Amino acid sequence: MTRTLSTIATVLTLVAGVATAGAAEPFKVGVVHLGSVTDGGYNQAHADGIQAMKKSLPDVEVIQVENVPEGADAERVMENMIKRGARVIFAASFGYLEPAMRVAQKYPDVKFFHPGGYKRTPNMTTYWASTPEAFYLMGMAAGKTTKTNKVGYIVALPISFFLANVNAFELGARSVNPNVETRVVFTGTFLDPGKEAAAANALLEQGCDVLGVIVDSPITVVQTAEKRGAYSVGFHSLGVSKFAPKGFVTGVAFTWGTLYTRLVREVMDGKFKSQDILGSLRDDFLTLAPFGPAVPADVSKLVDAKTREFIAGAAHPFQGPLKDNRGAERVKSGEVFPLADLRKMDWLVEGVVGQPR
Image (tube, rainbow, N blue to C red; front, side, top):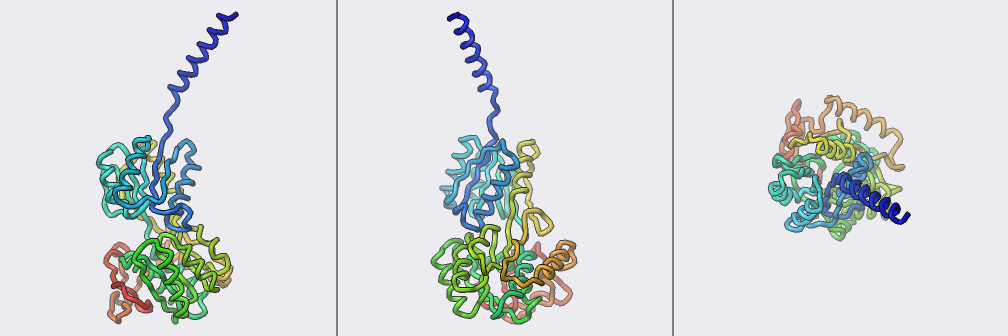
């Protein structure tokens, strides 16, 4: 009897060993974030997308690290993820481009994805979505909501893509309210709550009753507006609305989940190819946030109609004639400023108070 039990135990041990040896190694995806994944903005949008991907691909194991500075620290984190078995890396900050490229060249079998990158390697894909059309729509909603006809924008840096978003916002607002002006303050950084609060309060003191923001986390700005009875619009994430339940108008949001699912699935299926992906309102990873309670009832119909025009190609956010805020003609009547040339938009449109330099 003892010998029989011993034999059974040996067999079970062997079977367990075979099962363990035959178990498939989980497919691991590494994600590097510049800030907090609960920032209500840029980082949370990426983290929510990863979470949605994980739900669609439950066998994928995610290695996620937040608050990683750009540069050598990012490289070390990415390399550590690869040593832990990561076969895909999402380097989820614009400033991670150079570090990610260096690591990608060192590990050619690992696939990399970078948001907003302007160059790539054979094992790296870049992705983003063109946002001026969505900012135009958001401007329409703000233009119908403001009572003072003054909107304030807190912007990290005076780079072309951000200027284009502010311009589109002002043009959208003026399309429904010709008296709206947009006042811009540049903070010089993507995350500095102190500077953002000071800028928000200064704009509110100037009479602005809607505040917009193009920094990593919109929480400080929308909360400042909410506390002082003003309205706000968001950027990057759907999650910011809860920080301004009374005064939130709407926001431009990236819903990365379906795109991330497709990208990881392509790698898993051996179908990866290095490419530049640029989406728009026509795609499933860019949307407007639901309107807040302060928005007039007729706004949704106006915005929905213009959205359909943009999707059909029947409208353009930068339709001439357009002047800059110094009075110079920038786009002639009957012409448009091409979205493909946004890197060349180094000016602010008529109606925007402030200068990029």
